[in-house]
Length: 183
Image 1 (cartoon, rainbow, N blue to C red):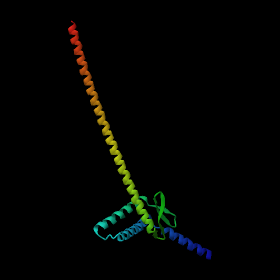
Image 2 (image 1 turned 180 degrees about the vertical axis):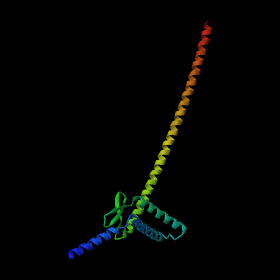
Image 3 (image 1 turned 60 degrees about the vertical axis):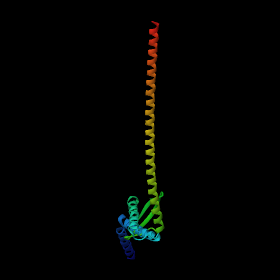
Image 4 (image 1 turned 30 degrees about the horizontal axis):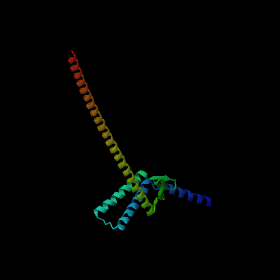
């Protein structure tokens, strides 16, 4: 009888755990709350008040993190619990654990690293786009220079051709004059 009772309790516990595993939205919501709290703490440490400009900055950071979470956050479901992770610097970083309807998030140091990594990645992407634009601009300038050089050479070739034709006409006239003198 005890075996059946223990088995039933374990079965009920497993069913409860399976039914109460939080979904990705709940993980994201809890993480965004943690991000907001972290950003507010950092702003307070830096002496930023609740003026419009600092609120705008906080909003930008929060939105940036939210966009990053939407695109990079992955949930691994292990039936009784789930975990979210994101790839940072080529490594998977576990961000939260969801079990029994609750989400337990990462520590603030990991959040700081994640925010810095996200900002660094965005800056690298921005730098890459800038370098690509500069390379494209340089290629365009080089192409224009080549076209100008080609036009200059064509112009010089036309001038040289005209000079030769003029010289040939002079020589022809001279030869005609000499032929008339001989007659």
